[in-house]
Image 1 (cartoon, one colour):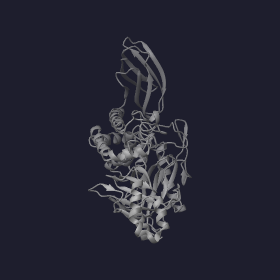
Image 2: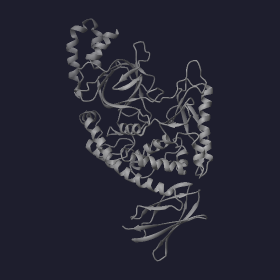
Image 3: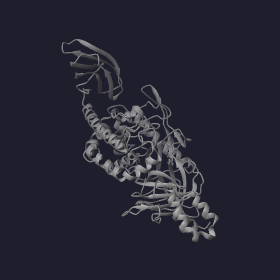
Image 4: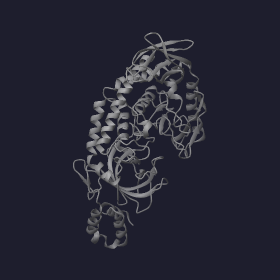
Length: 553
């Protein structure tokens, strides 16, 4: 079938049975054209028009596997100043693609995401602009499914970009695939080396010298073959910790042995120096290796969202030896669909830090880096300073709630079609936290969770700043109904004795507590105490810390 004929079919006959009819009566196509177009549109009982761009993909009935890519044809309809209808001309893209299913844990969901590349007729790369995004050929159609707000990834990437980190640009759309309405999707940029994406230096064909190009590396899952290396084993609180690193650029099939050795040595040197460092000289160990602000902002973003996939999965960083001052730079951000209280019962809580969450265990382990950073006064102060700098305009309850309302309004009509196709509102799907019976409930839950998280982080970061001072101990909430969190900074791993006295000086509670070096948060159960004011004392062989707590049930 000639290209012009296929393009004509794809513009005006959107469903698979129409394609079959046209292929059988090719010689009569012009005569039958009007009738076929009317028939195909009539068969679509979910989507006829949208305020969002409409993506129409056809693979002539060929299944789309996880890999390799299947050849298909894509038409995009987007009329910025009017409503888009499925009978409109393809005016953003009208051409060939290769497409495959993407994702690890999400690849088996009913609504799947796709990775596609825009191609010329001969199969070569076709770099194009899509919906205002800079020219490239590698794209993602992300399928929000677990996230029933449809907003979480879009919001996180928006925050990351406003923090100054590159993160994928996004645009909502609706998808028809092989004649079937598939719902609301998000067009996103695939993470890759590019001057408009991750701008590390490209290795030239003339030279593969390991210091003449940049590197993108990912910490990622065990679902697929590990195309990279395993870190050394580090003991953290008596438990072994290892991390799986994967090559992103150069790709595993392209990277040379010298390049492999070079980037592995860069990361290993950073890890070894950081691991061996002790307070108060930890920053002397890591500052020669890393771009501090990028690590702090990555921590801020993922802690704000309480991302259970952070640090251990979909964690990208890059390094460019050709830059003026080569440092390891964290980012881009990726994989935030489980953020903001959208992951089971434990992770839906807006309290607690995520960087020291190790309940996932091997092999999805969090690198020891983050706990070590939080033992260091330079890192903690930078973390607190950047939170305070950005909380007025970025980490702001009112502004983010208003932004969620804007996204919700943009999606107001499309979400109804999406949840007609995927009737999961009010239904507990695997991993997600059920927010309520309507889409409006999803948005309300998201806004309330974010505002609570901001309030909690604000108090915690205030305590972190105070913890930089010697003799810091803070018991909260205060007053408390009996479950008390004790935060303090320890100059080393110690065994402490916690004593609680009433105002008569009587010992009413005692417990031995093991601390780690640096900032600690430990829960203490004091529900058996009567209402009143109590004195808490933390004692080890070197220090005595005190605070007061009111029990009021």
